[in-house]
Length: 70
Length: 292
Image 1: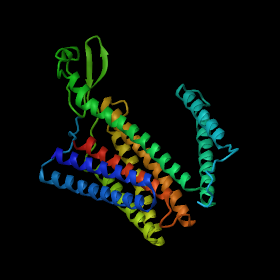
Image 2: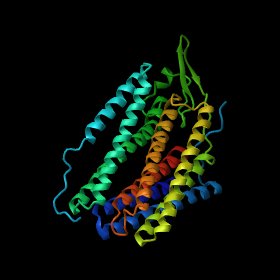
Image 3: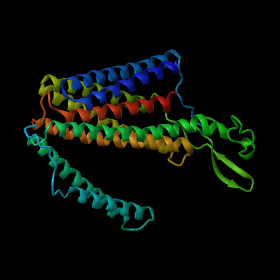
């Protein structure tokens, strides 16, 4: 499960980087590239959040906290 | 774009005002750290000078842009400038995420005797190499170290998850705003921008609430490596959200002034990218601090 989460994070980072290249290029083509990459990055991020909630519900992944120690 | 000559401003006084502001800020900050009574007001004065400089300088740039004295090459320079700024931001957060990774994967296990550090547990008797590192040395007396475990951890499905949902929603709303701008739907653009700003402000409110809870439960900047990395990462992220909200507000003002059209809106693109970046940093924090 950790591997899947990390893989999606990597694709999100690539999308964000691709949007940056689009912005740097400018013009109609760059602007299109930027918008599509950002749309991809937000879609994947929302998917990842839902996946984490679902995986936690199913017990495939455990959150990183320990119960109060006091 | 009407002028083919590369525009260079002459005789501008904003850089020297910025230098005075930064110097004043640091003189105030340094003296405040040494409990000098005038440190705090001087620091506030420094902030005020910097705010004045930002307002004036960026206002000048906006007027120059709207006045049509920038050509395509100046546009390119702005794009490169934004990219280098972003590069510095990425490096900045990479260093803090790197510190978190180093502590979790290397230094804390080493203190617990991992790898070839077989004698370390004898030096630090009673140390438990866990993450989050809840047991930190509180004092070193004659009898050795005493360990304190005096903070509680934040519940992942409480405010952190709500805040993640809030910021992701703001990522969706700014994407709709971006689409509306490109399609020339002005009213939709303004509505989506307002929604994005509102979500950012609510996020900050919840973050302050979360800090209150965490601090009340004993988690402080001094609570060992976990407290330090937690507050540094979330604190600098919160600062970036604050800056992002200010920038979005300025962009909204410029939209209402009619500064952008569907083909020419680099300022919006820069701020939109920055907001997506801040969103991704939070997602990274949520995953690496609370999940993996």
